[in-house]
Length: 297
Image 1 (spheres, one colour):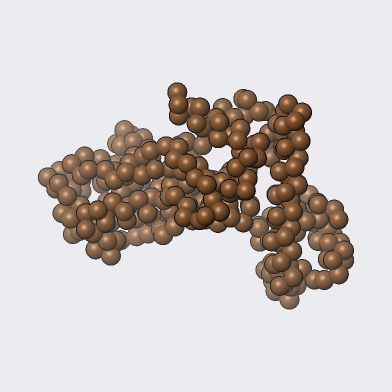
Image 2 (image 1 turned 90 degrees about the vertical axis):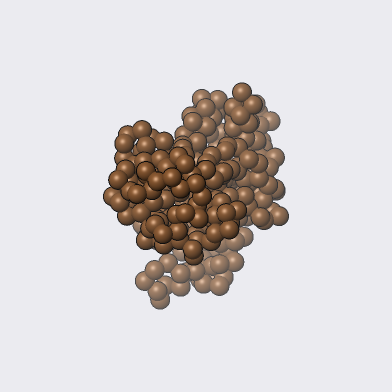
C-alpha cells in the first residue's frame, strides 16, 4: 500500500476539492485523481460518491479516512522517533491555532523553534477554538493552541499564556466618557461579539456569568468571525465589544478605538493541547520545551 495514495485521499476530503488538494500536496490535479483511483482499485471499493458535484465520501470512504488518518499519524510518529535516535529532528509539525494566539503568540514561538530545529517543516492551521480542537481530534494537526480548555479525556492541556478581555468603544461613544462601574450598566448599548466556538466568546460568557448576565441580556448588533473584525466594527461605531487585550492594545495606541478602563477586564487563558497518545512525540516535546522554557524565563 502506497502511503502517498492515502495522503492524497485524506487531502481531498480535508480540502473539499481535488484542485485544492493538488495545490496542498504540490501535485497536479490529474495526479491526485489517479492516486485516489488507484487506492480504490487496491481496496476494491469506491471511496468517493461521484454523483455529487462536491467531494462526498462513501460510507467506505469515511471508514478509510478514519483509518488512513490513524495509519499516517502512526507512520509519522515512527519516523520522528527514529530521527530522535539519530540525534536530529526533521519532518512536519502541524499546529492549529485560534485567532489570538495565532496572531500574537505563535509567531514568536515558531521563530524560536525554527532556529533550534531548521529541518522541521511547520504548518499552521487557523480557526476558532472549536474548529482547531476538532482538527486535533481528527489528527489533522499535531498540537493546538486555543483560548478555551478542552474537556475531552483524550486531550492533555497546559496553560501557556494569560490575557484579558477589555471593553472597547468608538471614541465618541457615550460609554467612553461614562462612569459605569459594572457590566450590568452596559445592557442598553449595542454590542458586537464573536461567534460561538471562539475562545474569546467563551471567556466573555464566563465573565458575564460572574456578573449575573448572559449573552441574551445584551443588545447584539452583530456576531463576527474574527477579533480584527470586531475592532473594525467598533471603530465604525456599530457597537462596543469585549476583545483580547493583546489585540486591542495596538488599536487603542493607534487611536482607532477607545479603551473603557472603568470596566474591570475579564480574564482569559490560552492552552497548549495535544492528544494524550502523542504527548511523547519528539516534535511535540521539542515544541513544548520552546514554549515552557520561555515562560520560565
